[in-house]
Length: 263
Image (cartoon, rainbow, N blue to C red; front, side, top):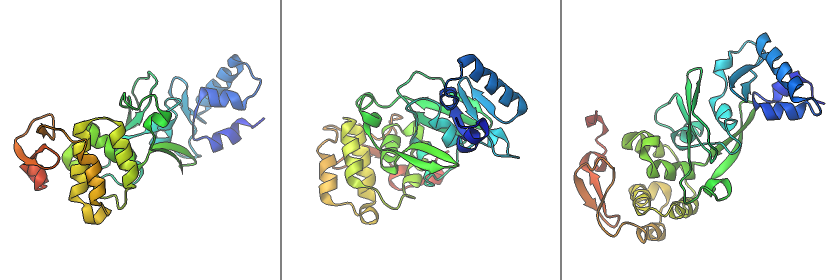
């Protein structure tokens, strides 16, 4: 049986169930008693019910890796949207909010300076393996983070712009990604079965053809699923110009990337 100290060294963030499993035949009462003792001593800290962190010696519990914490927030949790881009070092702005995909009913919470926000995956892919795919396990901070790939994060923020921070943050962040697996991008986009999302993805890729090695065949696959009638890029319905073949009305400030003019 692994000692508690050894478990804490290899599990900087962990669930009650994981710790109980390491105690093998110990009763729930014993496990609860041990955890209370370690919390009282300061060796571990309770994030919320069933979720703990074990900081390294001299470190604050509230300085725990937020991506590891989010990964442990639900059985299928995966860091997503802007937080995934931030994890991959491809976010224009650093946020103190971490979103995570999960199909489980769970509430958001705050621990230290970080707000953790659960997000239901789009219903079209929610019941598929890995909630539609594009989820990887990456070693980080002494543990393993479940996180959306840059490809999935790209499509997810274009599908739900509010979770990406709005168009300036989205475009600036995605422009920091040097490479996308375009087949993965398109496959996931089409799985969402949203004409507007297909158009948004196609529009972004068309702006970065040379940099991202986008071919006409890639754009054609998306254009087939673009709206048949004109749709606004954003739900705010800002006036702008109609961009073909995407049938998107794109505001001038987005078309020209005049970000500084937007409050």
